[in-house]
Length: 178
Image (cartoon, rainbow, N blue to C red; front, side, top):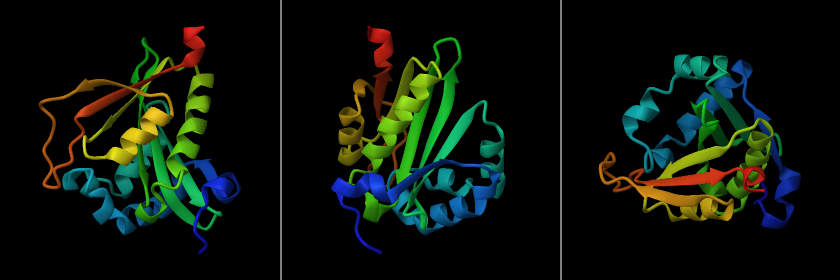
């Protein structure tokens, strides 16, 4: 498999909304990357994400939408989740996971920018994301896509890796600023 070059990223990535038909691919992606993801997420969170969990997530499209990122339609290299937070405020939370060897190659930025465009078409006013202080790549990604740091949680969960989701970021739909 050829390495992704930032200049041709749009030619080799496919972004697709996940359905129940993708559960086995998602489970395989999660299993293959569990050790990498455990550096950023509590192990209990990762272990509860079984077939039943994803069936529920993918069936309830009112509460959350999952998007898969494929490299040349060969395999999943990333997963993004958009979860409804507050209907009155029209706010959502976005979270994402990218296979380690595809990080810092522009994949996250490419997908996140497109998801923000899609989300804004649905009238979403604000998007929140939460990351650990040590996750510099994720912080750079969020800032490069227009997110601003809004809060630091002093009471966050401590992981053995030292990474915790202490930082809160917010993206405001630019249409609202006009």
